[in-house]
Image (cartoon, rainbow, N blue to C red; front, side):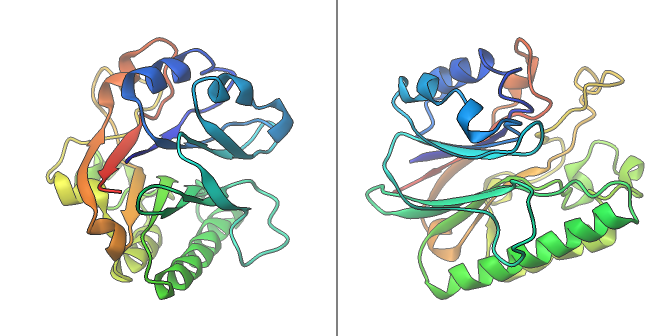
Amino acid sequence: MKLATFNINGIKARIDALPRWLADAKPDVVCLQEIKSQDDAFPREMFEDMGYHVETHGQKGFNGVAILSRLPLEDVTRGLPGDAADEQARWIEATVMAARPIRICGLYLPNGNPAPGPKYDYKLAWMARMEDRIRALLILEEPFVCLGDYNVIPQAMDAAKPAAWTEDALYLPDTRAAFRRMLNLGLTDAFRAREQGPGHYSFWDYQAGAWERNNGIRIDHLLLSPQAADLLVEARIDREVRAGDKPSDHVPVWVELAA
């Protein structure tokens, strides 16, 4: 099973490019972030015609996450547990009914800037809630994947110019510590399990020629439970998508699981 994450930075802006990538890459399941669309405005028929089941958790003009799956989905839930007052559409879960069922958690973690401040407090609180959800899923001892735009630069090698990010919410010590706490629960960073060293990025800003200069950062991640990590075959970043027509500032990241 090929499982991908892709922050599309607006479904309307990517209405042509996304189907082209799906046709070329042929993921079985893809979790989308920043669909920036309410559920009833999402162009689900386009993807259903391509053979995908579609589940969305949308929000007008901001945030929003979705799951496209060629395989049946069961037990779909929306919203990260732990704060009933949180109205931001950033989390969607479902079980993919593959030969070996896989629970997937599609997420769009808060940016947190400017930091310090309320937005950064929200980011850290959200990460603490996510950690609680991971702990609950681990108790089940079943394969699951948390995938999406984490807005976290885990290590210096995950940025072309780490010194430029030292005061940014994506790279502050508390952010990276919260990310490490998730990994330390027993999760595997799928990409780093297959590829080490610097120079591997999933985001390039639209400004200052970041793409042309390869001034990127790696902030889109797939974290695997121990049972999912046992199924890992491959993990890659589809870097070339950033050079396409009307690209997102992110590119897809995917894993292949023996499921």
